[in-house]
Amino acid sequence: MNDRRKVYEALQGASSFLKDKGREEAAARILLQHELGVTYSGLLASMREEISEGVFQRFWRNIELHGAGTPVQHLTGSEEFYGRTFQVNKDVLIPRPETEELVEEALQLIERHLSGRQLAIADIGTGSGVIAVTMKCELPAALVAATDISEAALATAKENAKQNGAEVIFQQGDLAAPLKGRKWNVILSNPPYIAYSEAPGLSDTVHDFEPHEALFAEKEGLALYEEMARQLPDIVDDQCIIGFEIGHTQGSAVAQLLKEAFPQAKVYVKKDINKNDRMVFALLNELPTN
Image (cartoon, rainbow, N blue to C red):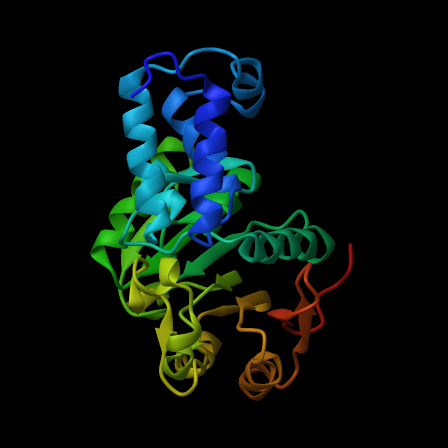
């Protein structure tokens, strides 16, 4: 190996390697920033500097692993979500931008309909905790709870809450079952919603590395929405916001489930930035507009 290799040469070689493997070339920059411990601007400033052999070897090993399918986030151990850094690993889903849109819509609805009220917010199937932690950070006065059936996922979520200074109540159990005993006025969930029949179409970075129990659901991906529609009427406040992330073909079906569970609610499907159906919201009992 050349002991005088420059940073830009390492980046160029890695980008070319990943392109040949059919991976996103931008991953090379992310992994190089991670190994060098620098920001994007710091990377740009160091392009003409030499990269040590040890750093290069670690960087190139990660490039090879990503080329073989390992997600970048599993190699760096983190992902950004709503301006904060969260730990990710094999036990939790990697946060997606679409879920940021679910959070953003929920925050806007809260400001419009529940401003000034004492909030009790629940995140069902929290995974890495991104929804619950973000809601607590954005609304510090709110009571925020999160559930997950996976003990390992909850361990990751608790660590993320600690690192982001968010006081969240974590409870292990199936969907909304642990939330009984009080009324909630905001319910959010990004549950497993991929049909098992869709598995062959997933990328290897998803299918081979992310937890299947957090990806797939029975009944063409609708099983957990059906269960939540049965559970929620017993635990929601008279005035409540419910928001689900969904698969892009599930809007009508999930909206119908919520309409049947809450006949008086205003239910609507919202598209994501890519113009795909991605969220279903229900506003219970004609929430007033502030």
